[in-house]
Length: 446
Ligand SMILES: C[C@H](O)[C@@H](O)CC(=O)C(=O)O
Ligand SMILES: [Mg+2]
Image 1 (cartoon, rainbow, N blue to C red):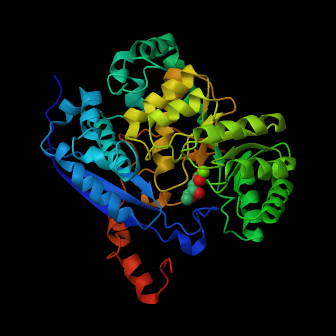
Image 2: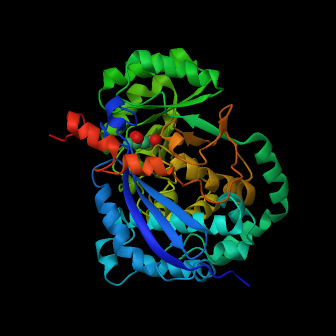
């Protein structure tokens, strides 16, 4: 019989890191991000807690915090296993609250807040079972796994029955794949060389650093200035050579034709993909770009700002992406992300998770490990993004060795931050922010 563990309280904090000071995380659209998160702590009547977060870029985190506060009554007072044993129904109730859904539905701030809460629930579940989340997922029967997913709006691409069949197909291979993954890890690519605000000297130094660490796949930000993009791509190619892989990321700055024209100018650098070439909502625009760039050998990647499974469904249905970049904190947490993996598998599209942000590397690895063990079994031409930032604030940070993510063994979703981090980085009263505000050094949009 399932244990009785009651959720007795939800705390949510606005945690920010002043990354804009060094231009860490900068791109053509987000020129001054302060990597931040709405950080959720689920208190229970046991010794266990659950920790979850959703990523933000600084200002606005307080709105996501308000979103979590508006939803927390769905969780407080509930038995954790009542949620886990009928997770899809709980997820649907949370995202379909008859009043709150008007300010979504299933998108924007409310869906970020959903992700933070749902991520905390999965962390709690992993801790209660004494398993890292990737293992919790991988040990589920196909029926149990599918019972966590709300299939509303996606059965025209994948039904529950088909999902169970897909998962059953490779059930006998799970143990061998898990062993292989624990031994070799999962390939990572790095974006750390590519933030748009970095100087040439810093980019060259970082290329060498990550080459020395064994990385063979690198991503560079583009889209602000064509001549500057050419110069930086040339410089990065000179550092990493032509045998290694380069991707470029425009973070939505272009219109459709502009994206095509700009990328034809950059094709001499042989980028594998152009990421987020245009508005994240423009499915047919992405399809047009993908078609136009196909003869030039450039694929389209997107997903870090894809609002929900329905948008992903249409991107996948319309060949609007060739690399599907699920994000662990953008759509409504693991339950919804699993449905995207299932659709991508059915339609034969590669998933390469997005991880540029706080805690995203920590979380998203679990999902890709599960995909490898239970669904896909193939790592060829796939990577998990790796950015080398804010890991020191997590109790169990990512472990990337020789450009491969090594599966964590600690229970949970790797989302717990140190107490000192929460105290010092809480916005605006934490020590870090009080000092910056006093010195006038914090980001000011004016
Ligand atoms: C604002 C974030 O750093 C963003 O640039 C991340 C991103 O696009 C990526 O990692 O990809
Ligand atoms: Mg990106």
